[in-house]
Length: 300
Image (tube, rainbow, N blue to C red):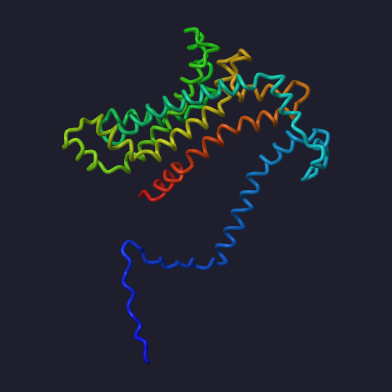
């Protein structure tokens, strides 16, 4: 007796199993490129590694003519961190840096978005003059501007005022971030915005409801760049904020370098603590930054 196989009726709602895609084999050139990337990564991360070791291991183990690459870990401790937190107002410095950084980034983001939109959408002589003015202002070094800036803020009583540091950092950041935002606005088709205006949206409403959602990678990139510049500023903060309690973290870190000696453990411990906020920022904005860099890489 021959058994005739019966067809299995398809089950409603059940998906067919996906065919497993095979990855192409890694070529020898890709292995070499991976090894080169790893070597470059090790070189870039070595200063961070040495900062961590210097903050944990006593200086006598490292300040020798031939310091060991891996210091004795049995002597490692966190005494330097405790001493820094007890002897210096690091929390106050971090809070001041946070206020300066957030204020600079938010104001720069608003100004750069409007400026980049104006440079991208309007082709008038005024926009061209504004664009070249921004480029020219970007070429001026901070050391050339610091004396006039100090005189201006001293005349209006804004020394030891965080707003003075915020405004100067905004002035230093906006020229570059405006051109950065212009490149992202150029990538948004004008037809989408035009269709929204035909449906009744005004220009500002079309900008807010149509263009801005498409600019999220650019906004994240601009915000991160402004944060990096403001967080790492030393010149403006040191000049405009002479009161130690009003210092930012970069100025406070410099105070560990004395005239005749350097507190290496405290210096590195404060440096490690100052890196944490930027690492947290990169952790949350990393997906948008990748999209922003990828969109910029495919533009013609």
